Image 1 (spheres, one colour):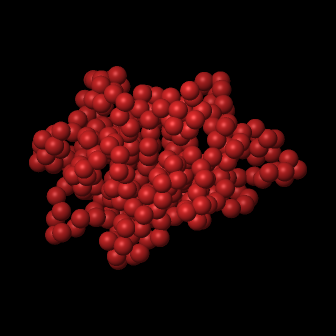
Image 2: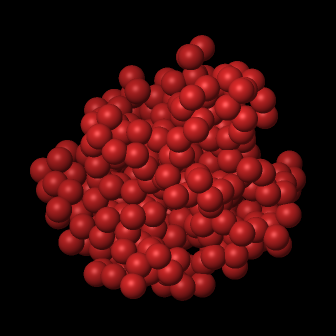
Image 3: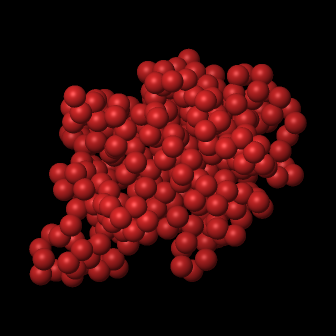
Length: 327
């Protein structure tokens, strides 16, 4: 980008954090690949999460810098007094792969497309950074993995509902489906709370070997105890339903619940996980721009969370060794 161009956030094409676009996944050469999945046909309440990938990208441009700041790669974290993602941005190792093709009224084909696009990213050796959509899309992403993984699920809800009337692609059931995948060794669920929880869902999740931390249980146990539930050396996929955060933080969420995580609790828990375990995939889901306040703060939170997660994940020793950047 020319130093002569100011390039304010409201100017230009809003790819994720101004990353280059890769429209042909067979030609993908990157370390981190942004993938939008604008699907909300599985939402039983308010629609609108399909607009989230577009809104998150627009908000992410605010973190790309402009004017003189464009001359520096990565971003500056004032709390830690250091820069993150310098190598990745300077060498165009983060790319925006656009959106999965959504076939409305045909969820089977939509989910095939989700899995196919994710598989192409994985075949290229990149980490998928997925922007939902509602939470059903996580199943389409995770079933693309062949290697053994653990799934860490941040959510106010267990998403372990049975398939009522054969509705297999609802946003209340993805963890039930993911838990049946042969390569998923276990699921750790964090942040569950609220009056809509189902007793049978909790019993089934635990019976299937999952560790469930309610919101109060998480605060009692602490992050270090959460880490002990993940097998040492196991790669992880992290799925964040934005409703894990406290209700006032996420006005643009149809499933928000009171007494959730602060943003600091969420980010520090994720940071601790990706320090210990190589991140092989991430999603943030259930952001609904149609419900958000005019300043789009929920979409902004989604963008910030994705950026900060990537920033810490690329410093994991296992990741660096796989990329040939650590002996």
